[in-house]
Image (tube, rainbow, N blue to C red; front, side, top):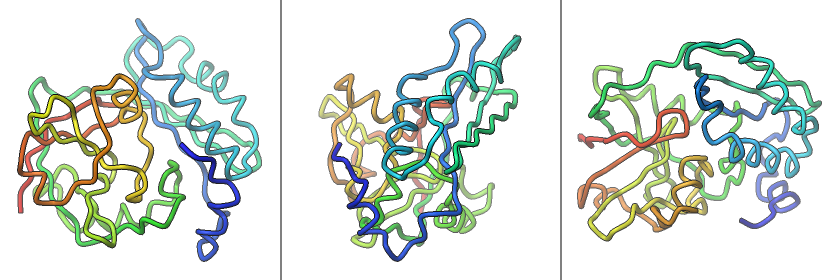
Length: 224
């Protein structure tokens, strides 16, 4: 992935680069520790470097303190501020039922493929919140966003994966305007997923999945 520091600032010059924090949301299991910890820390460190945030090196120890003594699975949320301040909160993690499928809808809210801040996980989430608000919880469990070209990007809290029978999962490239998800990165590195641009019509050509590092892959059913 190319370094984006100065370029990001030029391309996003119309968007304030202050007033937000970096986020990592992890799953912790007492028997195994943090799921995909190294990938989460690598993404946090990379984003902090590109945006001029300090303090990323202290994230691992802060996470360790937060789960000290935990005896049940946890959802762990870490935020890093520009000045290096770290906050970690935890909540019980309840896994989805085996075989669960999420109902998915496509939002009218669009993402800007030129906004490189979308590649980093931050508290700036107005677009995702707007997309989520288009449908009630009874209508959709997750909502997929497209970019200004009509290309598939990602869900509000998940990456998108399509199994069309080719032998690997297809997932949109970050150039479309989406987060470099940790689960997505792992699947690409394992050669279980490949980057390919997707149109909404493509999502009906195979088995659709969405997912993130917290919950893994989730079967998805697209409705219109």
